[in-house]
Image 1 (cartoon, rainbow, N blue to C red):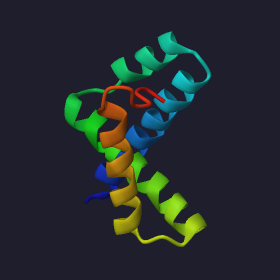
Image 2: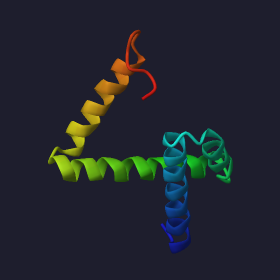
Image 3: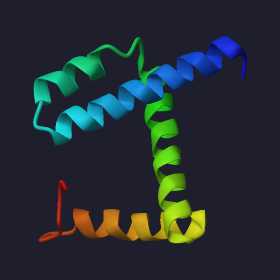
Image 4: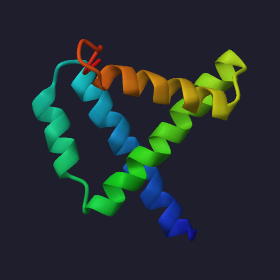
Length: 90
């Protein structure tokens, strides 16, 4: 990855974090505006992928779990959320 690519990926991850923060503070219009500000779907996807990896790394470091354990737990929680009566949109 070139310096320009890394910088673009970093900005995309920051924007993705902004989307999450806006949503959690109830600013849905702000979250939508940030989503619309991504130049394309590939950049949006890369930004959220980097954000997810960083977030999982923070949890891994805080809990001592392996990344595989965290991903397995996350997968189980996602599956449970999609079942009828599951927690749905947290």
